[in-house]
Length: 314
Ligand code: RIB
Ligand code: CA
Image 1: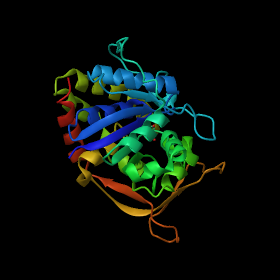
Image 2: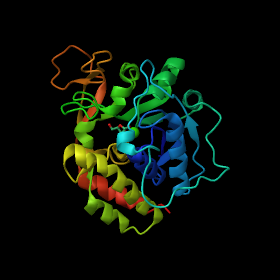
Image 3: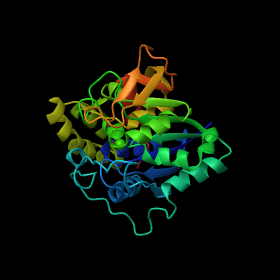
Image 4: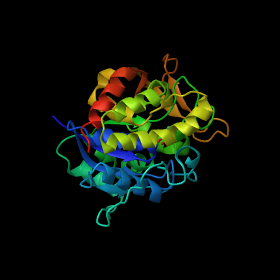
């Protein structure tokens, strides 16, 4: 049975790959793609989602614009990783057709209305700051009954942060939203840096995927060529973590990952540790387990899946 999903994202090079992987998977029914301010400002994340869906010839997918900033903090963006547009790359620019536009309905209203009216349970797949998800839960808490699972990219259980020494970007940007989601009682799976740093793209993988010999795989390569620049400098390695597609790969083949059900809460205000995910891996607190934290990925299975799926796109 198809999984019905809403992909909430801040494209972003790795978000773009998550969109491509989801769009290539008949096992998933994408009810909509909602965008949030994150890697870059909201206008650019929306525009980038339109670009990706145009490139893969999926302009049937509806794009919704959501929160332009976190619940309390000002927006912190990552042009230093993704470039000025948020999807900088070499190669031909993507021209969005004039009749493919962002939907009029706001992303939060779309999420609430879609959950309320759905006869099936829905998977929410956030790969950016959790602002849209949190605002949807605040707007209508009863939608919890219609949400099967929230699988999100964010956080860091036992490894360094990538935005501050203690915080991963998505959670750093909106820690208040993260705690609203983590406190919702909905089944949650966390794809944090612990596991996404085991799924590293490099030249060998880019060349292998290019053997698909289609425009979507070529686009993947162009995206990765830009996306790896920052990571090579920061981590001094040729390997670059492909964070966001882990969310979609988990829905397609959960056996790629393993983890543990533990308690996770987020530091909201500290000057030093804002956005830190406090993961009680050893169960030393009396806080209830609320999140399935992944800490192992079979990267060979992941990239075999990604290459196969990208080969089915135009
Ligand atoms: O920390 C990595 C995450 O932050 C990814 O989702 C990336 O796209 C950015 O949103
Ligand atoms: Ca993202």
